[in-house]
Amino acid sequence: MPTPASPHPLEPWTRGTLDIHHISTGKGNAALFLLPDGTTMLVDAGASDPTHPRHSGPRATPPRPDGSRTPGEWIARYIRHALAHDPAPALDYALITHFHGDHMGTPFGRSPASRSGAYRLAGITEIGEHVPIRRILDRGWPDYDYPAPLDNDMMRNYRAFLRWQIENRDTVVERFEPGRNDQILLVRDPGAYANFHVRNVAANGEIWTGVGTNTRAHFPPAEVLRPAQLPQENACSLALRLSYGKFDYFTGGDIPGVLELGAPLWTDVETPVAQVVGPVEVSVLNHHGYRSSENEFFVSALRPRVHVIPVWSSDHPGHGVLKRILSTRLYPGPRDVFATDMIEANRIVIGPLMDQLKSDHGHVLVRVDPGGDTYRVLVLDDAAETYNVLATHGPYQST
Image: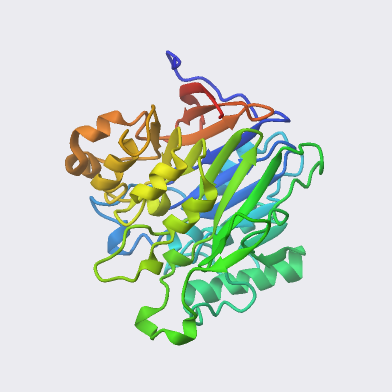
């Protein structure tokens, strides 16, 4: 798998190609999808609160490319660059996997107000300030009351943003519905690529059964649980499987799979999700590869050729997690691991296992060739807005 001798410009997206850009900002998850017909989708727009102790200091990834702009603005600029071929760039879909700042944006004291004054800019709300969003999907619309009412500054700001988008931009907002394969569709040229589809796998503990559009409830009813027993936000994350011909891709927000001490079995969401997702070519590590993720069954069931780790902390990934995804005891054959931005604290804790990563910094672009039979992984420079290709891996064969 050769890599280029020197950085070079990224060739633009072309019709029939599937591009999946895992954007490196150092402050949360964001992935831009250019689907084969040109339909666009953003999954998450993380912008954590830089004043919070967990998101600053030597254990936290510094902002990429730098701190001169907010993560939301960097993401928006990346989107506009990637969509330069479109005379009217817009997001056909924006998905929020769950309601944490590193996935949707946390407004804090210095967050500016929107031009309308109706809400503050952080993460997804800042994306909407710079790039039109036609449809937004999340796990809570319209009530935002599962497993209990969601009422904090971040959620109030997000809901104010949704109201303004609906009233002034005609944005459609929907609840992500597990089981469906017709909620996220190609909209630029419907029907042109019959071998492309997106399966909604899980949200709020409701998980696709693998049969038709049927789902089942994995969590107990909220009304029979005490407040301290209710499902945590990470466990409620939405998950999806994207397929293009033989190529399959999985992303599942922060779903957990390794039980905490004394926790009930239903807090493992990875296992029932893995049972219906099956083998994929590319998988994004759940919960950034935090120690509660990537249990043995999940890794062995999905058995991806390529793992992608979105990093914003020295906890990403846990040492045990990296051992599991690299283990040929869990599944045979080669696998390549790409991380958006490891820091020195990762290397100190993880040690020599870090040397097995194919890349430990940069935007990670998965580029799937027309039809889905082959794909490549391109590592792009995240130190400046050159978006130059630093390395190319592949072609890989979809199976």
